[in-house]
Length: 66
Image 1 (cartoon, rainbow, N blue to C red):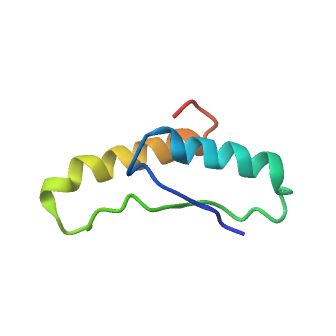
Image 2 (cartoon, helix red, strand yellow):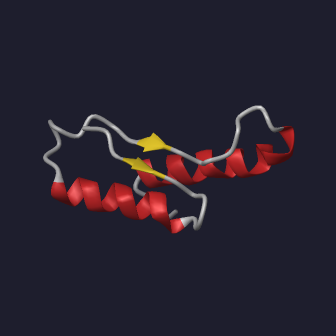
Image 3 (cartoon, helix red, strand yellow):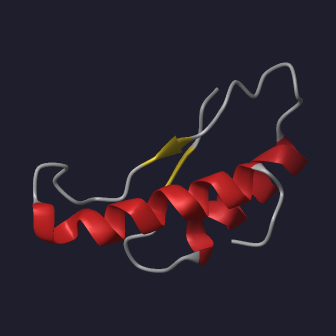
């Protein structure tokens, strides 16, 4: 299982999704997480938001506050 989160509406969504899934799904069944920042990857003007989404994702997976 690989749950998906986003930062489109707020920065907490992805971290909350990771924490919830780690509490609910056994470790051997949890294969990872997916990020859906909801921006076209080719839009250069959205690059900052996409990079911010990656930082939030990395912090959440490393168990830091996102």
